[in-house]
Length: 541
Image (cartoon, rainbow, N blue to C red; front, side):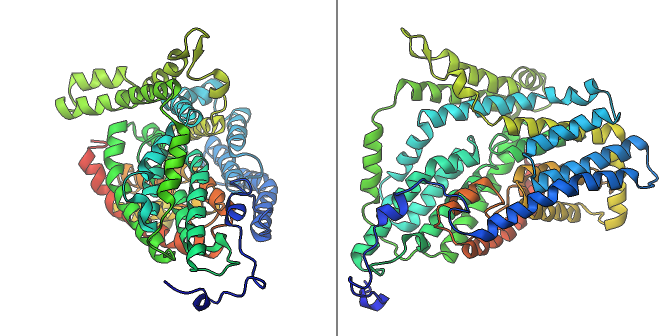
């Protein structure tokens, strides 16, 4: 063990001893960029939004009046969509509102009648969103997800090694974010992560492995733990269609444009190998780039035991939530099981798929939360409508507007026009080249705006581009959907990045260094594996 002197520690009178608990746990789990005193990011955000206020209408007006050789309804739709894309990227107003303005403009400017424009908003995937979000709300409210996290961290041997603790924490985040909002998962687990970091920091302080006045927010082990929390959520969110908004948006746009249905089971089979490989790469990259100062630790196991003791046995509300969640997942997977047994071309598979629609299954599971009682005498159910009303309605609105734009691109013929024009301009004709272009474009856009907006912007471009080149758009569009979640370099890339950056434990330079490495490797993994997984799972066949 290194001595205090070897690490340059000064005398106590010159270097007061750091209060680790106060530094890490004394405030809220999230501190805004302005509170951190980091003016560069705040200035960037203000500038981005200010540009959007003027650029969005300017782009729409200029394009709308250009003397182009294309039908009027296509040019008007393109002008509106360009303005909406600018609103999504610059975010002068909330992203869902930008989409709603675009939908209203399409109707007002006479591109299509209101009933035709708004019809896709009744998509079954809207109900999948609503049901899944309500289930996730119950898991968060009643502590089911937190209980799962403590159980895994409490497994024998996990809490004795910084490497195992970080990897286990990432695994927990991955699994939970497959079914719960990535942002909600990170926000929920953040206090536990800070508590574990406080235990490790105090252990290092007691061993003399750091200066007495060290900054616990600048430990490499803390950076690795926080980035694992944020990045693990993004990777895990790829695992199911409901794991992340870009998944449902991309899948909906693909189904709308190609008529090919991607079932819950097919998505999981295709995504699981990609997620496993990306998680292994993530753990390797983070632990190499941010190598923890110590490997062996003591005290984390006791910390987890104390937290589990505070939880006590499972409550009736937790049990009801697990039942509702289990029923929903089972209903989602039944069609896939029937397809494996009897074949996807059988009448049994067709009947089960039609009657156990994913949106209906999600609604059934969510409805159970209002039926299963917590206290029968008081007529108290597992979840109240007030709880359910707190779900992310903005994402649901954004998804609906994205589906509307996709349908309008197809019905007006603008999608074909874009595809032919892009194919001629870029000279991209092979499936591999289009897939690589789709992934790179999605990653670049997701670094400067939300991954949800990235999927909504890129997928409608890639589908007609592939079709114009005579390439099946399924693989490039799916690759773009997955790549939209690869925003790892900046705090503005995803909400979970902003949350961990807000703790003060992740320096900007380390986020960029770790993020760019994982962006590049993740893009290669998606480009290489997506075609293989589509063939293996039979998606689109």
